[in-house]
Amino acid sequence: MINSSITADTSLDFDAVVIGSGCGGAVAAAELACAGHRVLVLEKGKYFSLSGMSGVEGEALDQLYERGGIVSTEDTGLAVLVGGTFGGGSAVNWACCLRTPDYVRQEWATEHGLKRFATVEFGDALDAICKRINVTSTGISHNRNNELFIDGCQKAGYEVEDAPQNMADVSPGASGAGFICAGDRNEITQSMTYSPARCSCSTGSCTICRSVQSV
Ligand SMILES: Cc1cc2nc3c(=O)[nH]c(=O)nc-3n(C[C@H](O)[C@H](O)[C@H](O)COP(=O)(O)OP(=O)(O)OC[C@H]3O[C@@H](n4cnc5c(N)ncnc54)[C@H](O)[C@@H]3O)c2cc1C
Image (tube, rainbow, N blue to C red; front, side):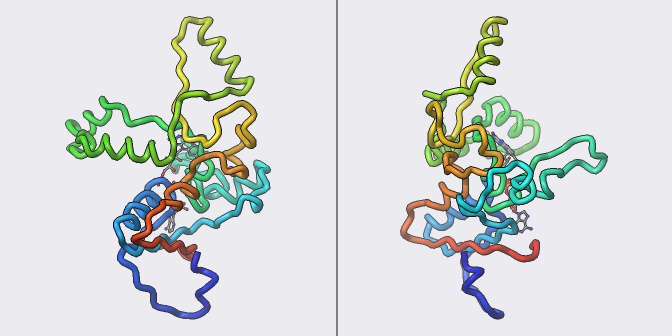
């Protein structure tokens, strides 16, 4: 973060500026940096260190969510949970990683003219990000609620599968599991805060700045 090093009006020189450090912004910034460009990421949310997060739900909503977790449509008919901290939604989300289904990609391409989604390159991009954030559906342990839910579904004849997820630790008793939406204090998700920002490229550079005002 460069905020603390800027004390007066200054001039900065970058090849690219990315607004927002969430799932989209962080990946774009990492890709640009890996391609050798100097990138500035402007993020309006505050960065919290692992020890700086209390894990208390009310405080987490205030600190880590956009508008304290009460974003809704104009008619208030639909509530939308949005992350509002460094890492965007990835800093608080539930880590379920579903690939865009092929039939949806086809629909976007044929009915909406978004042809890129039907290409092999887009499939490769999904593979690349799944690999980078360690998406897995094997060895996943479940809490008691989910165990009961799975048991009930199976007894009712439904097919049950584990949803793929990008947790660093999916074993029983993983520290902090079940509480990541109040801040990932144990760093068990591969959120944008940690994974693309840790992109091990040596060619470019990625500088992060907290923007005081929305751009
Ligand atoms: C509690 C919760 C659980 C979720 N669970 C899942 C899940 O299990 N699986 C799944 O696939 N998805 C899940 N999601 C949704 C997923 O996290 C979002 O779809 C995803 O984060 C969207 O990525 P994005 O890059 O579009 O935006 P975001 O990740 O929201 O990032 C946008 C970033 O831009 C910043 N920003 C916005 N405006 C400005 C500005 N003007 N200047 C500077 N910075 C700005 C914001 O502060 C934010 O950090 C969940 C979301 C939440 C909130």
